[in-house]
Length: 207
Image 1: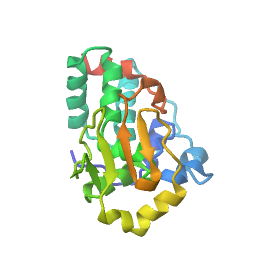
Image 2: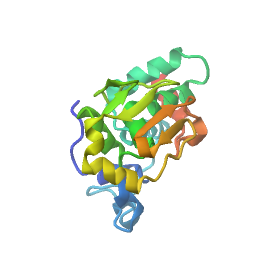
Image 3: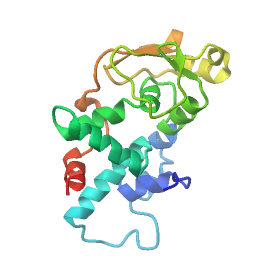
Image 4: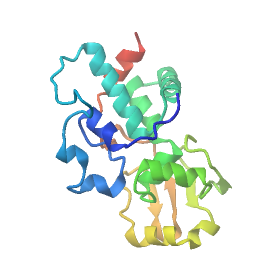
């Protein structure tokens, strides 16, 4: 299935909460979720009885949209998580957090995951000194992510240094002045800032 290219604010309204897909706009009064906190479409305001399957499906869709991944990728990550030691749901979130586009966003070098995905695709970042232009690339402990040499002189990245908000997660150590960061530990479940009930996703895929 092709990637969704419509208004992303509709996705937030469909899930009934902010997924922070539009960057700074999500933190203002202009956010459509704050104005119209109901699903989009003709029947968006009608009350519907949601089934157990519906709850599981909505949770899975919410996570997919939050990280900007397709169904085939989501299923691939679930199968990976299921084979790992530990709790499958938490393993799944750790994998999603380890995606390069998410790491760039967490480092504060993009206003949204969509922007981070675009920056990675355009080849602005290196991992351990080698250019990586695959947003789904999974980083691991010890990896060093850095803005590529030429890109550091661009006005876009100079603005990042001035406006850098800093990472909100402890598993990434960031050096804003050098436009680089290092993965110092595995992602922590507690640091996933979106309310996610991952056990519902596990139940859905386990059927």
